[in-house]
Image (tube, rainbow, N blue to C red):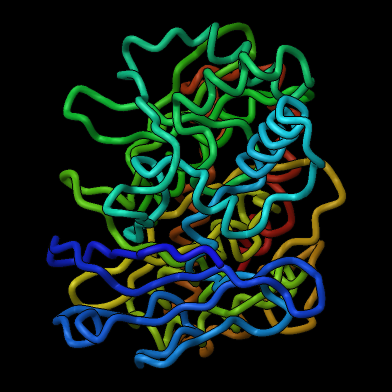
Length: 417
């Protein structure tokens, strides 16, 4: 049985021991699972909070539901899909070197192999007084050897020179936070941590450039976004730099995904609706956040953001409670095959209609008139998308595939209303 000490940096800035996480063998021979017990001192501390919605604030021993090996609040601190793939490949190489059977990493193993310095959120893991997690020393953004880093990411994706690629990527904290695309961590002159999204093998367009465009438009539409900028690294290739919003002046800020807030399993992350999320925010966050969620959904529909599942929304812990995090992972996508978040329960996950959002304005604590005003504001803020894209470095001849997204039926409906 593996025991791990858990600490949390509270919004006050104080980091305190929170409890003990243990990995236990499955009685049926399946994957191991975890249990957790809070320290009484944590429960008594001003500003303490549940580390996952299903982890009640009491000193009893608690386990996740039988179908989950890990509490979702801790999963938010673990590796993303890209990171899990890297860690699993590392495990394959280690097993071959050691001459032992190769198997899937447990949920706890994956969680603890993420770099402590770049791990998402305010939760940390310890053993014998030392933080658990690989070491990572991200370079300053202005000194990074981008060609070397891009080559390592490409090698990892293609299965070439894997050991050398992993060594480089893990040095840059390439396992967390969330997302499926290649990424690393870098710092700026002040030491602030930034996420760098790099091109992926098989990209059909400059994905980072278009995410830069949508973030710029989102800010114009009154939506909070993290500080961001673009690094051009070749013809049609860019790196998007985003300052980590779960760090502030060296402090770690608690993070919770919407998936965790709604207690969703992986197969459910695009099956709950925006009105479900609005209801959860109404109970957990503020009316201001519920209103901003409406604005974000309107923006999503007007710019063709399809990959908007519940891992791509999050909350930050403040001294007054949970608040929506800045918007992230928002990108126009003209491919097919996405099942996006429906506006209402059992609503369509493709061809979502913006009038459907207006019809449920009351679920976001908005009157119809106020909701319509927001729709017009977002439409106006995003209508010059083409000029914004060209200003970011897009070529005029590459705009056409995106016109159907940005100048589609949703925009026509709002402008003609």
